Image 1: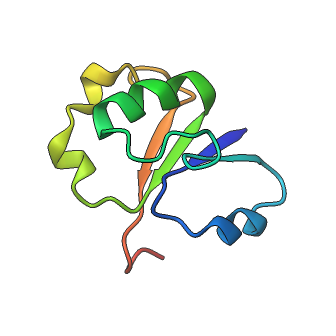
Image 2: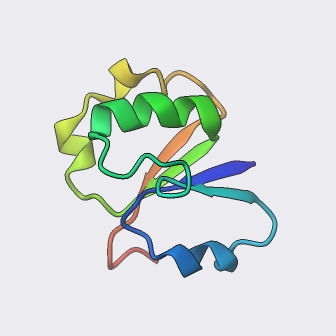
Length: 83
């Protein structure tokens, strides 16, 4: 599985993942790219996109970004109080 961490994650967070390939928005040179374009690019390079951006789900129509109905793709929105 290939995981893409949004730019709001600290770079050392990558070390927490040992059984998956982890890419970062910063590492790909995509820092500062707007969410719509970022989602389109992410779909090409990862299976799971992980973000802390609470507004993403309200700013983007996820269905039009091509993530769905791709059964292997997921967008995970993490919040401070998530388990």
